[in-house]
Image 1 (cartoon, helix red, strand yellow):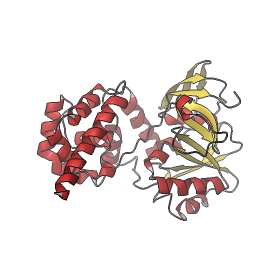
Image 2 (cartoon, one colour):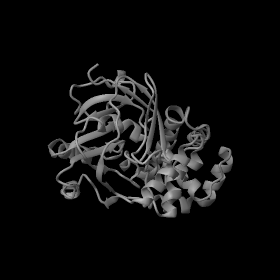
Image 3 (cartoon, rainbow, N blue to C red):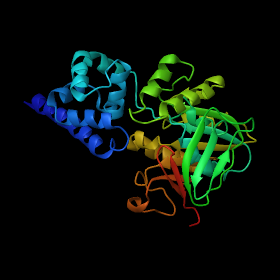
Image 4 (tube, helix red, strand yellow):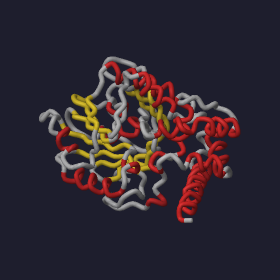
Length: 332
């Protein structure tokens, strides 16, 4: 009886999770994913199959990407559900090898104003680096529009990666001088590896125009000069400190956590926040405003109006979580 109740609870949990995704996340980004998620929410049989996937790998965008990676059709929900029923063993197996990784280079457009406040050459270290696409803010071109129009390019001219973002407020903007770049990830991806590249582009939601092409172009930039990315858990003792020790002494160490903290379990996140507060480094992050309470001064998560771009826990701007807008608030 207990096992039956547990199985039903797992199915109910899947249906609730996908219903929430259909309601709160898919609208405005992917009509197809919204349809698939709504279908699962009302389909106990398919939800039961997906319940075989570990809960930590059951995020709707990851489940959908894994099925697409394995050949699921980009069609109506009944076709997708039929495909899942025929290939669930493959999906479960693939879920043990792949985790959700949103390696979006556009986030550099949100990071850039914070980087512009850092003096001197920069040694850049990213936690949750994936393939390292956010480790190249100096190799991308930027086009900001809104309260003012700003165009920035690398020293050698227009980049094959041009990042467009809306701009509000007096955000400082200049190209950083990055002299060293490295990252940590529990499952790093190689920008030169064909299967890793395919996986990253498959994580793009159907309907997100131009995003896959932007990621492909950024992968080419990273592949031409691959960063040092260490496979490991940055919340474990000594892992972050060991990599930070490799940074050149004559550069300012900047540790970034753009969008990764929500994906770290709370205990590990608290350990990491403690490490970041005591490191001899500048910490730049992009986080949901209610994720933790280290902000100073404190902010109201309900009225913030975006994710928080912060430097050393001081909120600087409200930003789109993927970098599409920056609203500078420092000193306002």
